[in-house]
Image (cartoon, rainbow, N blue to C red; front, side, top):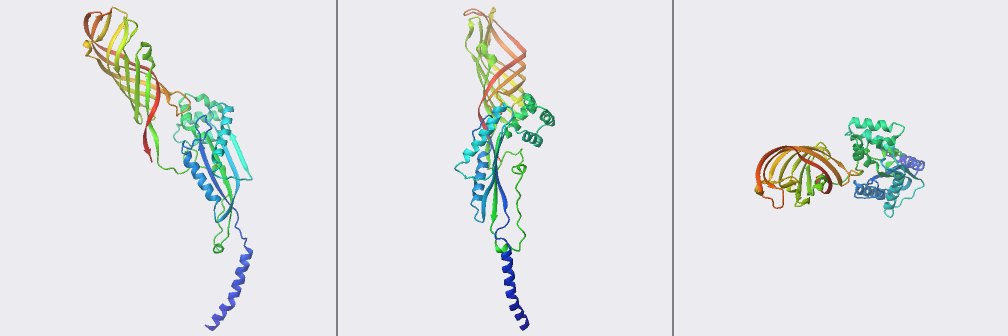
Length: 418
């Protein structure tokens, strides 16, 4: 026991000397680490004004500002901004000069928005603008698993051609409509990347630990989530539009002096319900020509597109009172003004937006229907206060619906999206 105690006493100064040597040999600062903060925000079509409420921009920019401030005030490290990279792009459907201007203005809009919220001082400030980022377009098309392969092949073949702007010639085709609605909105972006250099203070208990990992300076391709993802930061549950409520006017009825208005609701994917009202209480410029009516033609529509656009089929009913004369010897009116027409049929139609933006409120729809319409009517002499000449019955088979309507979306159902 005595020998062991003496041994320990002899080793203590050696251990102290060894530890002091190690502390002097190790640098007081660890190797520099690199951190990055990044954000990608989106713009409305043909606009350069930054809208925080558009496409989760607010959640993304707030998360970026919060992370920036945390890095800037990190109490455990000395952190400086090493590099700032900001880039902007526009979708290709507009003129090149306009797209170039939009890209520059969108870039400046983000810098103006951040001014006063965070202080960015950097020795390296790399700004790039692209009127059209063709590489981004290609990546978006390739990454979209929902895009039909025939559309993808058509778009890629044009991007590989000598004139990539020829993709705009697809406008009005199914492939072009997909680009305008699903792909182009994701190209109207500005991205901002902050690269930090952080010097971590060395702590003695960590001398014998593994060497801390050093983050490399990231590549541009790894800064953001995949391009087919809209949300740059986790977002809370939000309310998003599900289906619209539309007002419409059938232009084909107006030349006959038949005023009309309709309302259409779209409560479910693929289905909508439309109710038009037609009214005319006037002669057609002369007493022996008239198309007086009070009628409605409700219809249930099935749309091949779940967003209720494009091609649809309908089943409709017809109900209305009528008083019709066409400059002949007789005029025809529902019997005793108590037997309105009542029938129904089926039809087909097509709807397209009036405008390039998928968010446009205006639309144009046209359609044609056929069905059966039992009629019980009185016949009058077609003169002023003409007397009753008889009555008749007839079952009409044929075209019973025709419309070319202007539509306007006035509201929307909303459902909570998880």
